[in-house]
View (cartoon, rainbow, N blue to C red):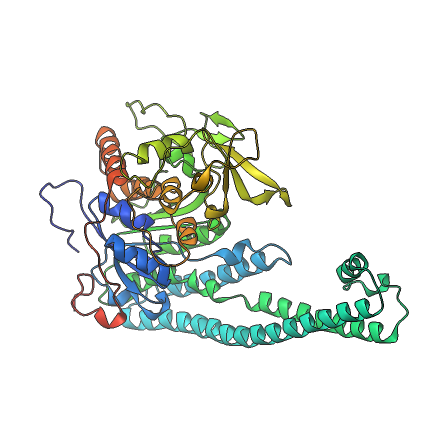
Length: 517
């Protein structure tokens, strides 16, 4: 498969297909490196932002598309939604993770068992049958889960009505507001309610029965999982399809990223990719060690298909210090999963200090008036710490931000050492400023609904810049690679949209550069 024509032989430009593309965190990084990206994204808000940013997009569910639709895509990237694995309580996350690992093992066995099959078509048919069985199992679980969810909503509504009836009965019995509040708190422990009233007792009994039904429905939903369990398998299936389907050409490289809880999935992926003759590596990356003004961890899977070379890919080298509890740590991160090795005979560039919120916003202010000048501030998180909602996390202006989430617009900016808000609208980050903390360009054209959630869910473009350059340009010398990163970072900061495009539908596949139709 030929690369995109360039005036110079190095570095090569790639055609990238980005699954679960979001608002364009990876896409804008790829754009400044000169690669062409097409994303698939279902969220209407993210598609609206991508449209204004000029990002080529097919709107819809990834499962409605196939790898065979895009034969000219050379690189596969993506971050499948994996919140299921981080669900707290009842072991739901662990069960969902174990289920996905079992599905991956089934696919791997199908791939491995057909490696030496003399008939490529028959081998593909066997692998495809394994996928269809998994796909059908997941589909039936989704159908059953929808039914259980409907039952759960009905029970919750009945439970709410019952709670209101209990409240009214307590008020009719002359209980004070404080007594009513306390008694309602103990409804799930009826033995603690020492009230001799037959009507009240009957209401509480019915409430308890509804609670029991609700608990069983919750357990059933945890057992069934949700659609995200199937979505995390999609990138692997696309890789398998392009590698084993007769007439297809394998992706030259793969980059996948998600929350740290997904690392076991990436490890299982690498076993399949090894069978498919890819060189692989997994790495837990701390975003602040790559110049992102934010502490965040991402689990990354990297793979290349380099002919007979099967050695593991080297780790991505960090450029900045690790931030930890108000201190900068120049030594290796204790969570790095691979050692950092220096190129023989060359000295590395000195590791820089992590970048603070203040510095990031000040630098971005050169490119957009939407990034405003502020006096020193402390960010008070919308989230509590240690399980205490009232104990809000705090970060000062001269530190990296805490992890930017979909609630970033709710964070308060106060005067240091106080709980007094900054004046006016400076007490909140606007969308441009929140985007800058995620290393989006200050001029990024955020649009659509729930922009804070779009920003919080996105891969930090500066992190994507490092990973893309590392995986797609392995042949660059150290100094050339450093210069490439420096230029890319400056261009990322100054980036502005050049055009507006409309999201495509599946019917628009014909004539697209990746389809060959």
